[in-house]
Length: 276
Image 1: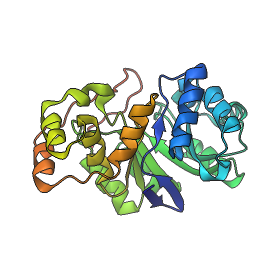
Image 2 (image 1 turned 90 degrees about the vertical axis):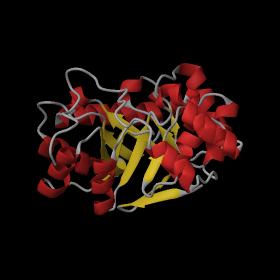
Image 3 (image 1 turned 180 degrees about the horizontal axis):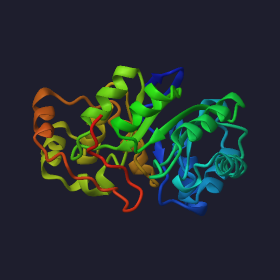
Image 4 (image 1 turned 45 degrees about the vertical axis):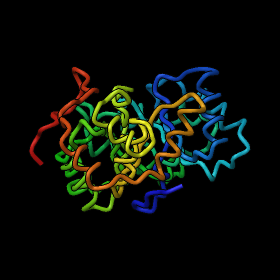
């Protein structure tokens, strides 16, 4: 599978997103994905499914070292002591001595970013996280983390799909040699019904969802983590890695609306348009 290299991290371009999956259904979905060849699993403290993901990791025949595992600490737990408790709890539930990538899930409005990133670095130094990163960070926050604090982050996970512009964030990450992981890459399922994508899909003999994923996979430094529980969807997402869109396809996608943000929680989402 194609992968991204950033700051010493090697991350497969396609991952399995697990938001909204819990219990045995989540465990079974992760096991199916690993059986199909997925080697990138994404979860989070807030998802309430780390125990289910951990059960799959305990049951699979795939070696732990061959799996890229990401989890995230919730924004209410960004004080160093709370982060340590969160990390210990995540590792216990995931049944693993380390995660490959540990992310700040959301930037807290009143966080001490230096202290928070300092604790993330300690996790890395202690071998609890192979690499560290952030999620839902704007360019201004990325500049603060990287240029002012000097944190060795390797990835920013953000909402990114054909209807949401992320060119500024992506350009900054590329300039620093870092990765972008796209969540909601299928627009929470809505892109599967998009007429423009459907026309492109018809010309290529694929589905609209595969076109949306191929658009992301074709971009340097970009990974995607679509949620997929069923065999047919997991296999279709894998097949999208081999789909190549031509210039006409890309022009049609470029003309789509680019301001349809689906995840914007009140109370702790950052100022998306802040200068940076």
